[in-house]
Image 1 (tube, rainbow, N blue to C red):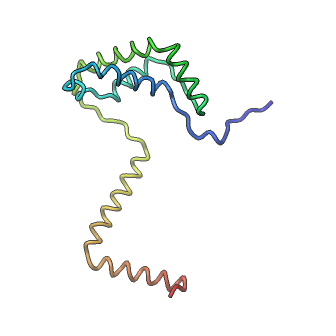
Image 2: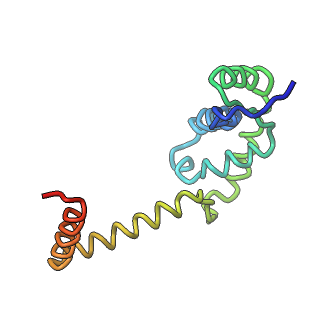
Image 3: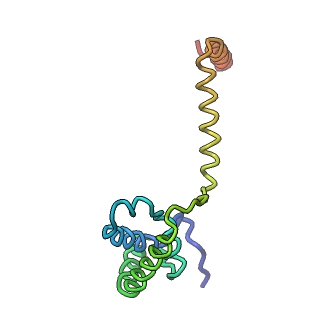
Amino acid sequence: MNYSIDSGAKVHVNIMELLVQNEIDKQLRLYPKKIRDYINKVEVATYALNRLPPLYASSLIGKEHQKRTGMQKYKSQITLAVRRSLAAIERDPIKKTVPIRPESYAEHDLAKESLDKLETLSKDRGFWVIIRSFLGIICIGLSIP
């Protein structure tokens, strides 16, 4: 029998990330606000996740199954990994890091830059004359009165 990857499955998630985030939030509630404000949750999660097994799911049923598995089988490991992670991050809570940015942010930055340029141009009256002329040419080409 041949099996192939279901083309309908477009998303997979690591349920361990959700479990770790919940545990971080739970443990941080015990911290004074002044300390909490300086703790980088992304670094805490990364540290903890590197010490735990992944629990991937690509369906709602799989997600619920992996959550149960994580809570039953790995609860104590998650608690310990987050505790150790917080201890490690606390040693240098205001350390400067350069976060990883998804590639899609580059497209967003380019679009924002283009919109900013358009906004600057739109303040010039000549810009609107050009736009009206351009729209007129399009309407003539499409035979729109």
